[in-house]
Amino acid sequence: MRSWDFSEHAMLNALSIGVQGIQAGMQRLDTAAQRVAAGSTGVPGEPGDLATQLVEQKLASQQVSSSVEIIETADDMIGSLLNITA
Image (cartoon, rainbow, N blue to C red; front, side):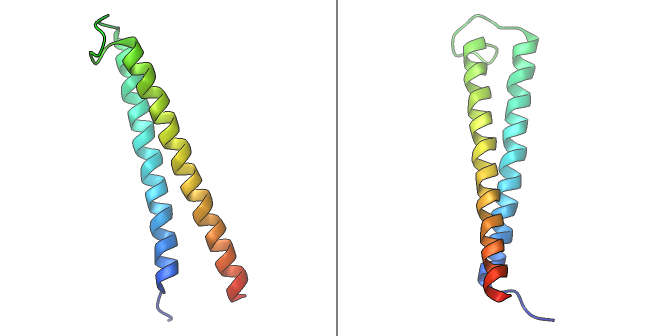
């Protein structure tokens, strides 16, 4: 059995970070959506404020998109590593 080198570990770590980012973004989106569904307080900056929750939803969407890019980059790196070692 061969040992893992640094680059393999780094790529798997990047995949893990990407997945965790997607999960966190989805949780953030779900929380914001629940607050919108529960009703707005009408007070700017309050947790139930519609504008605040729409911003939270946009940030969650960007977090998920960024995490997907991390995964795609790690996938490209794995493909390059396989091409080099093949």
